[in-house]
Length: 89
Image (tube, rainbow, N blue to C red; front, side, top):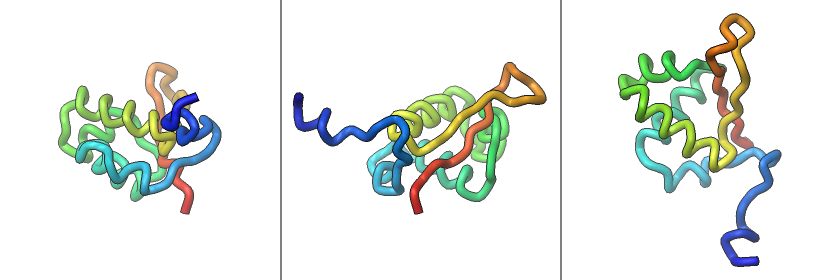
C-alpha cells in the first residue's frame, strides 16, 4: 500500500474545506454556490456560476472525488441529478 492510498478517505466519510483548497477555481466556485443553496441540478449550477456546463460537470467530478458533495436522482425528473454539499463543519 502506498502513502497516497493510506491517506485517501473512505467513500462514506464527508470531506472538509481543506480537501477543496487544492482543487481548480471552478470546483471551489461550485462548492461555494452549493454552500449557499441546499440542492441544485447541474444546469442550475451552470446558470448560477455562469460557467459552461462542461466545466460544471468537471468541477462536480473533482468535488465527488474528494467526497465533498452528495448526489441523488431528482424525483421530479429522473434524468437529472441533484447535488448538495457534504462537508464536515
